[in-house]
Image 1 (cartoon, rainbow, N blue to C red):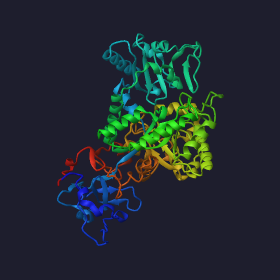
Image 2 (image 1 turned 90 degrees about the vertical axis):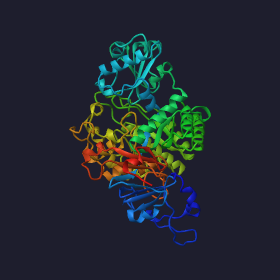
Image 3 (image 1 turned 45 degrees about the horizontal axis):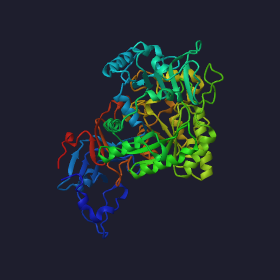
Image 4 (image 1 turned 30 degrees about the vertical axis):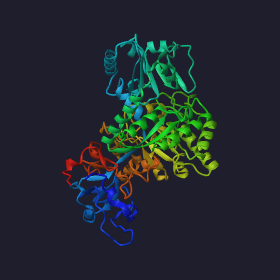
Length: 585
């Protein structure tokens, strides 16, 4: 019997009330009757629901892709019928699938399908990878790729063209950093783009130049990357679709079935090639995740772009995607000193970094979009950028009477005076869990902000104590999307790849329950999906994961080693198979 056969058996039972996650049913005539058989029954499990009224259970019944009951194995035995597939989990942990409030599916897919530098660990590795890419693509066109690490260019993360010139001076070489805020280019690319010592910095951008000669050294920061953009071949429609499918497979394998695309480009009248790609993938039945999209605010434009953003949101909603957010980029990153800081950078007394959007435009945009029910979603790295976002949220909320789920992402440094404002203003604090540990990039950060501000790095627990909502988003492919690695770091503040490193501000650790909530139901809330997914509750989509070890019982430093055995999206396996558990009809 098919997984959808329950639809034909339901009829008047369709709208029946399931009280408090139990198996109690009321028939159309208020007379108790036998429940209809479910398509799928998980039994003999350790079920963590993330529902405060019923956090633990033993069994879950699924029908037509929805959760229909949660309870004990004995109670839910009544859901077994002739066509029910019974899965005995033998005490394994069953949880709601994870969500991600910040991912770049298209950028990530393209990053790995072109000349990817992600596997390189040294500059010599990068040179070998690039040489192979040149050999594989003969001709004179640009070699473009993504994935170099800022930490390999100390002390400030600024790359040098000489490293690329040693590979080729005949073809333009353009490589985007793993974080997406910087380009690394060779002399040929600089020449073809007409970038010389006389070229001024564009608004919100920086051409890295030698302090003595004034010559460009090969690094382009923030908006300066646009100076060579015409040399980068644009992706085709097929490449865009492939990137989404590629990303979905990766995230499903990690137990993720809902994500927020953190910034898609929008053109006139809401046109968007990325949105078209999402629709095409969904129409082909190959989109295995609930998707929210955030339209990207272009800082080189003004309020005139608002109608286009609203048109794109309307189109996306008509395609079945959540589209209630606009992504603002308030500043850059800390090592290159493009993040906006309240106090100046160490050793650079006149440099605070800069806001990439004027406070006046920022406030008007958030207020006008907020009046239309749009969620402001703000990239803020420095403490001044975070404060500016909170100030704008406060004023927009006062002007409109309310503001839909304002959210700030990253927040590498948050001034103590601003930490309680998240709770006061109802702001979602969206952190990248694995970043809250010590590693080379963190060393670059500490060097330029100094020891005092280094006490305020990723203050997750402090914001939570102040009533703020924590939602995790990995910012993949900038960092691993693995939520189990994120859980481990969230409760230890120790680098999951280098466990011998000391913890980063251990007073900011979360409990495991808090961290799981921030990876599930609170992500669903940030993505405007909490009624659909994020916990195990009757009526919600059957988005579930089975893990190979119980993360509530293992040592904290072993959580990242946990594997996802099975991921269900809308009741069907999208990673792993039911057969591995000896599932039988």
